[in-house]
Image (cartoon, rainbow, N blue to C red; front, side, top):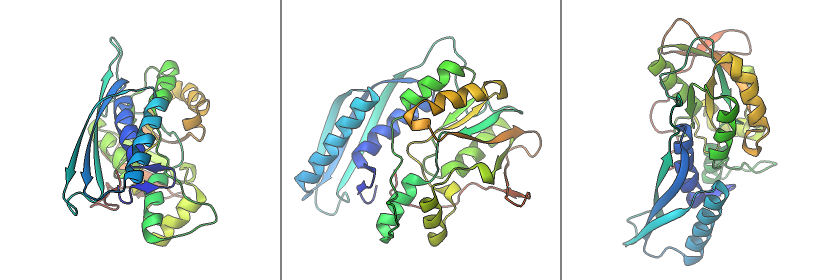
Length: 279
């Protein structure tokens, strides 16, 4: 990421959370991680120590050990300070119907586990030097425990995705296309922190297109939606979870937004790279 340290997170914490969350979104229980560093010559040792300590703390919090690593140093100007690659191994349960991007069904409920666009705008406000009454913090968090609690009470979850690059808009378009359904979300229900919303407006960015690093998009059968929300609300990383829409018939592959005026707007897949070096 650029910058490598932002309020609420850093490149080390992000590297752990991103891999843990990818495994969790597949329905797997994370078991172990490996990591590899590419360090630019001249990187401050105190910065490296801070990032390594952050990785260790995040891995402990997630309950997933880092079992192997590698380090390479490249000439000044070749690596933009620091690159980290993390690989994870997880275990899939047997005899269970796992979440998949083609399983969304008509009547399902769409849930997000908390406020959107926090991570992307934390990075963007630092880059642009924007200041607010309260500082915007990255939502970067390991979500394996949250997903485990969810699946305990809602074992028939159809889709799980962490809305990273491209944000909620990209994830919902992918799920609608692969499942051959239409997804309608309600603008009034979409959770965005007021400071994040203001920052998006100042920069002309749609919060639905902004990356998140500590949230899950969940598509669940209607009969399990209440239990799913209760489990999410009981977990620290899901206390702000809300239902934002439903899966519908017609217009397969489309995502519609019900506006505050009651009209429908098509939500397209984001084009291009809004925020480079964000995850």
